[in-house]
Image 1 (cartoon, rainbow, N blue to C red):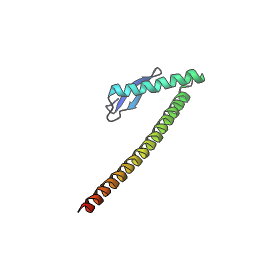
Image 2: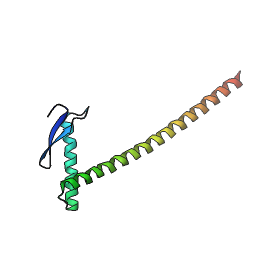
Image 3: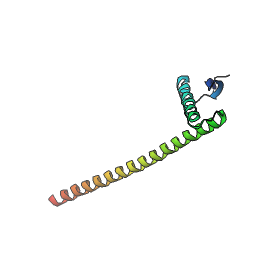
Image 4: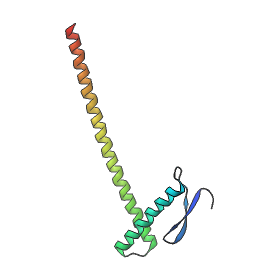
Length: 106
């Protein structure tokens, strides 16, 4: 094993995972723990002992979670952008009104 891989135990098997830039070994271990927990929950729910199938189902559940987070993030970004646009329009309107008031006083 070289320093581009980290070896962690998943469901009793040692597996070599590629090191991810910016993640510490502890963070990598935590992520693998989440995968292992998800596989365990799926196994209990489906009564499926097949590790390969469990891994695919866990990957699918993580993909669904990621998709939902991306959708939520995009929705939030669009809402934030609309709020900013509305605030800019109101500010421009106020500034234009103040400018008009200043011209009338002269």
